[in-house]
Image (cartoon, rainbow, N blue to C red; front, side, top):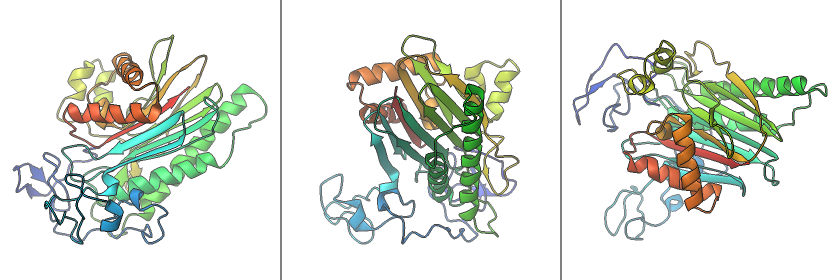
Length: 356
């Protein structure tokens, strides 16, 4: 996610000359790392107790980085290959999850950005099509520590969703209401996690988007804050966008502006709602659908849909990519990330898929 608010103070990027705010750590135009004039917020995550260093936004331990991806040499203490001098990729730059064979996700830094502010956290029961929980959070690039906050938010939301199955009062409507309530509780937990990773005196507090889906048998519920998205692509029916962005572009589209024009304009990625200290409202807008046949559930950040926004062509892309990768969700997610990078990789990219 590139923009949530427009800064009123700043200077020019020394790399490309684009406008930057005093507290920005990365240039929005070219992704170059900057030296802010104010102290960075101190993350509240205890990085010493993170269970997996590969998902630790701050993890730079050379031992965790493995061999150099260019030549296979050893990575030194400064984070560069001792053989060829190539800077090592951070584990946070690219990671994947696959809790069950039918559900997987890949999260990638992309090409243009200097850090990966996207995050994903997923869970699934073993039986295909039974129960899957997919969460994607996209950190706002102009805010401090958004990479740490987005990862904490995604994990916190997943834990709430994993906690129990929706029961309701035994009717379909009450079951739907129970899942919606749990999605809202997950958004609350995600927002709390963002706040916990924001210094109280931060001049530019951490913030991120939020999208989550809950699949329980034939019930599929999606909730969104911001402009990360969820789609349902049934094999034998029309593709469906499950979410509507909280963005200036979406507001323009609602007034009749053509989608391509709205989504490529100067304020295309300015979001109107988000998670974080200065968020106006973080209650997710939800959509409920009944799953009546096989298909693909996709949850993604704008790093993917930037290049293929509408549901029908994106469904075709997913189906074609899946067919080329044997219908395997992890390979398909990875291939979709590669495709987005091949289009330019101008943002971080997250793809989460469930094959139902």
